[in-house]
Image 1 (tube, one colour):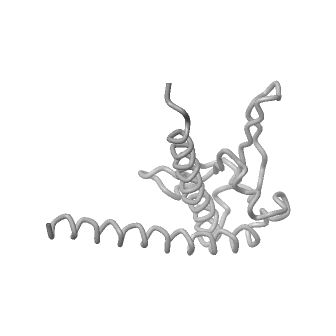
Image 2 (cartoon, one colour):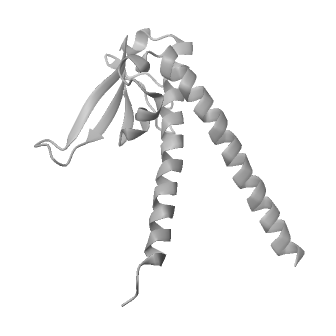
Length: 144
């Protein structure tokens, strides 16, 4: 019995930890949204989450080489919108341009990476909530 209670306590602590991290992440994202100049391209902070994805060019986001500059490339945050009515379904929008990746300062590189990973972190929560709500709606559908 205590084993089940211990698992429940651990799960509860983990969930509250994620929620606290999510709140802190959103605060950080909003600051970076302004300081990186993304607010000039996306008027409302909440509109950022209308993008299907946000990518980074010129700087690696992979586990093995996080933060490694891609020589000769330009550092740029790119938002991807999906429009199923358009001839070309995916549209890339430059949200922020920083010039040659090798010339970006260490502090700026950290902020850029923090923004992209933070956006992905929040987007994953929103996706999870979306599918959770769909599953709840599914339960309400009449059976056959």
